[in-house]
Structures are given as structure tokens and as C-alpha cells.
Length: 155
Image (cartoon, rainbow, N blue to C red):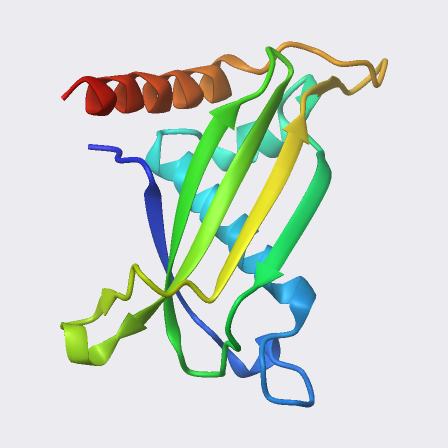
């Protein structure tokens, strides 16, 4: 069953780091985008159709990252992804990157994230480049998150 937040595991690779030996700032967003793609797949979205066989595109119109602790090559992270509907044409993804601690049986240290990021996505018609309603697959993904959150808030 699909859960929110969706959790994606990622090991920092040498290619992710800069000359100082820490993750290069832009690569944190790449890791987050990997988590986004994995979340779509886990929700049953076929990526090839979603990204290329669709009459709409969903570009990222805003992105930000807060770096809270350095991230080094070889470290493992649990990236928690939580989507939120903003409008019928826009959604936001929130990411929190938690280091996985070997001493905690490979569980993330949820009290000390290394980074937090946000991306805002807007759906547009590929031809006209004007805003368009979110595709059904994204709408279902976001609705499922909303229903699970509402049930959690009640319980």
C-alpha cells in the first residue's frame, strides 16, 4: 500500500559531491526529483507515458533547499516526500532528507534532518503553454494523500 509521506532511500555517490567533499547544492534537488519519480511509480504512474506521452507538461516553477547539515559521500538517506494540492493546476512537493543511522538498525534519525526542500509544479498544455488541470494520475495521487491525511487527523 502507498504511504505518505513516501520514503525513498538514497546513498550519496562520489559524483554528487563537490571539491569540499560534501553534496553539491544542486544535487540535493536531483535526489529529491528521484524521490518524486519513485513516488509516482509507487502510485502506479507509468513514467514514460507521464513525461512524454501526455498532452500536458508539469514544469517546476519554484524550488528551494535549506541545508541543515553537511552530507557526505557514502552516507545513506531516507527522503520523505509529501505532496500537497495548491490549486487545480498546481501542486507542491515537500522533501525532508534524514540520515540513516547504522546504529539504529538502518533507520532514519527523524529528529535531525540534513536538508529540507520544496518544489512547486504547474500543469500546462504543451501546445498553448497555458495552465491546464492536473492529469488524472496526479489528481488521484494527491487525493489519496489528502484522504490518508484526513483519516490520520481524525484518528
